[in-house]
Length: 445
Image 1 (tube, helix red, strand yellow):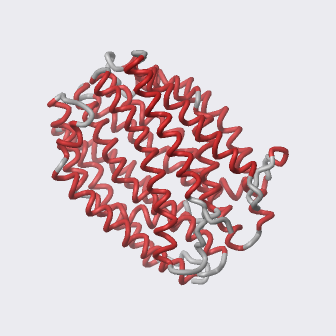
Image 2: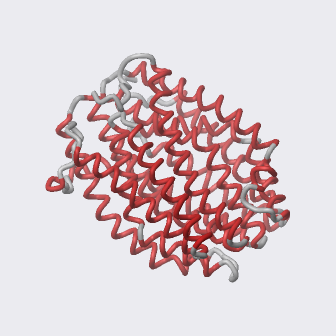
Image 3: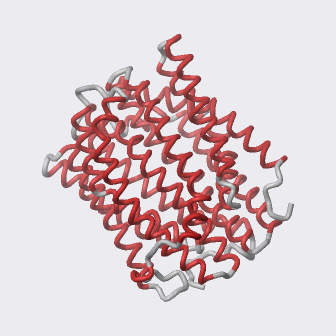
């Protein structure tokens, strides 16, 4: 076994999950960092409208990228289960099928993004003064979307076989490229929003090239051979069967966030900018949970493949415990330091006020998220991706939209928009925990 891979099938469970998660966490940190740098640069060196434009673009991007990430989760589960079971030939076929599907979806998603950018931004009520920059950012991003998809599927393949370190290295390099180019294009060449968008695409191209080079040139059983990249009908159906519910969940949730963005847009550019800045900060606190979510998916997938069911349950508890400790510390910090954190992005006092209010409301509910994220990852690793989809779409989309439709017209308060998040987190955590305890979801039960 390569030294970069973590053995999930034996040894201390706590340390297996932790050592696998740390590179994921650092990698996600770099991912969030180079997304956040876009907001920092435009907020400090362009304008509040530019910051609002980048923020308004994020949920639109997440609709398509989120859908693909869900499908790639299905590929990761199939690959990790075959790896855990020692069925390396089928694992290799699954890898090549996943790459063929990625190539097809790259064309489809790029076309869809370019076609629907303008009408979607208008539909969600992006203010006229923000609209040109939002259109510019999204058009450039979607033009280079293929790089993002191939990096994500490539790093997902590596994580599925226990390698969380190489994706970290590639993200670190891409992050540095993005930072340097952001400041160069905006501060030296005065390219504004166009500059940060181009910098992001170039950085994604670098990370995609590195991960594909690794997959093609390795001598391990997961090596990619270009001539073998083709769709295997049975494996694609298995990947899509597991991945489509996750894809649907992520894209519907992202679309719901686009609608939430429309509620925020109603309160003007300052509210949009405060919302955008706070989501960037929130993204950093979400990183540990995302990392443990990905780790437990791989852990459960491999150990179910190896029929080690007791180890599966022990791993889920360990991941929940670690992530809960981290999220508690982070939420306390953000609750008391919200104004300071938002001030990193802007010196506009109204933007800071909005961001701080949102931060404090979010911080009150963060402690429920580890339950949602760990059980989400565990059930996906078991191949039951429909279950978390039902809970998360039901709570984060349906319930949240009903809540907003009722409360906002009656009160007209921006803070109640923000309260929709923690309220639905609590409901989702309770439902998923009840299912986990009462349902028979492991093969031996």
